[in-house]
Amino acid sequence: MTQSFVAGGGTVPAVGEPAPEFELPNQFGEPIRLSDLRGRSVVLVFYPFAFSGICTGELCELQDNLGLFKDANAVLLGISVDSKYAQRAYAGKEGYDFDLLADFWPHGSVATQYGVFDAESGMAKRGTFIIDEGGVVRHVVVNPRGQARDFAQYRAALAGLVGS
Image 1 (spheres, rainbow, N blue to C red):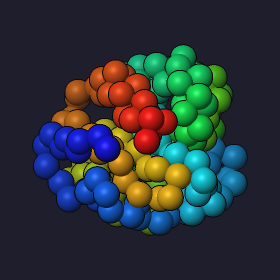
Image 2: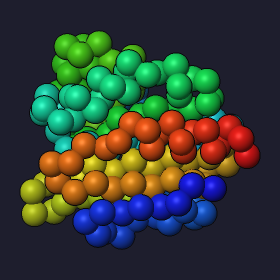
Image 3: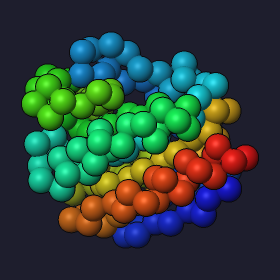
Image 4: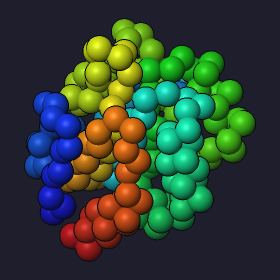
């Protein structure tokens, strides 16, 4: 089991707890429900906004390493408070081959469930949640504003899931 690390505070689901259920539209308007993904690991990557510099760098690194997620039988989902239309334009421009979910309305409701919504700025913090095949949180990292995530943490957390 991977340790949980939270920088910058917030109330997040703890490692070992069930992941909060949600349903959000992807960039094509298709509903994605967490419970429908049982039987596979799920990597939730909350990010502040589409088309922003740090977010684009992080998501491009994920795109460049999609094989790591596929090898771990993990579904990768990006989530921001942008609309599905912005998500679709963003995914198209950057060539992302994974779903981007729109936590647009009610604004930031899923980010709030996961303890990563910043109500002052109206955006999600950079939070990563790795959920096992049974829907249990196995890894949590929340980075402070302006700090990109370390990709090595994904590799280590996913290796821990595959090895268990």
